[in-house]
Image 1 (cartoon, protein in one colour):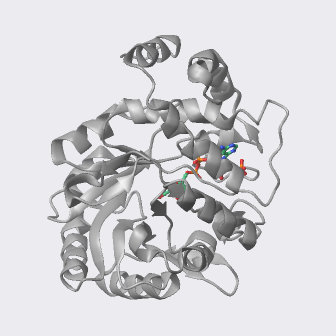
Image 2 (cartoon, protein in one colour; image 1 turned 60 degrees about the horizontal axis):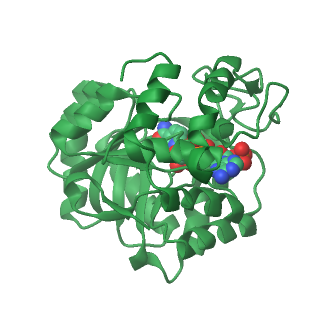
Length: 327
Ligand SMILES: NC(=O)c1ccc[n+]([C@@H]2O[C@H](COP(=O)([O-])OP(=O)(O)OC[C@H]3O[C@@H](n4cnc5c(N)ncnc54)[C@H](OP(=O)(O)O)[C@@H]3O)[C@@H](O)[C@H]2O)c1
């Protein structure tokens, strides 16, 4: 397994991580599904164990995934292995675990401290390696307060580093003022480049933790124009922010982009998913793709991307050309 640095924290992580949103199981937000449908916890634990066996050491979750369930499943699967792994989780959402619903947001210092303790309890650990603000559009004028609170948590030994999950480069740069800010989590895939965010990561020595690296499953190639995702899946009954899936089906414009570059992604014996992850590894030395993984087979395929390594510079240039974007 190839390792990369978690930005300026000096923490080493496997170059491909494990996204743990889906394994949290069903929950809702604003009356819509916010999970990925039903899950079998034994299958999730087997997926985590397979990932560990293959050298994946970086696990990304959030307190809100399955309203606490994802963190608990990680605790179960990582028992006895805590010192071998790097755990990232997130805060900023308020939820009701009884009804499995998201009820609001809170980024006040008191909530951040309480949320941190609650995540530590659910994860069964004494420290969180990377603690991420999960409110992507939180106001910039709250940044100083947030940094002060997070630095307190670092001083108390409860967290080692922190970051913001946001797609806004200005917000990422503002957070980078914090001495222990080490990463920004943002959307990045071969279908959706983010050059401005990667530039912020270079300037401030931050890791670029990549969510949606497989375009929410599209880049596995298993969904076509006729596929319909179930109604209890966030992709099946999409919230307003969703563009990759529309009316429960893959958005045709993204399927066309995928078809245009399929041959390049699958060159050298890679599967489509491995090619998509290879693009991310080639895009910058700071990228850390965290594909969502639900099964041991998905763990094997995604970890296998490292065997093939990054795509070549020529592949990247050709992809930009085919997708008509600047190199
Ligand atoms: N705001 C935020 O902070 C935020 C937002 C989004 C995501 N994230 C994080 O980023 C992680 C990854 O993003 P994502 O879950 O949105 O999307 P993704 O990684 O692009 O896609 C993951 C989905 O693709 C399918 N898949 C994965 N590997 C596969 C393989 N080898 N073959 C076939 N199918 C495969 C699985 O779903 P199916 O089998 O059901 O298709 C999986 O749940 C999340 O788990 C979470 O940790 C954070």
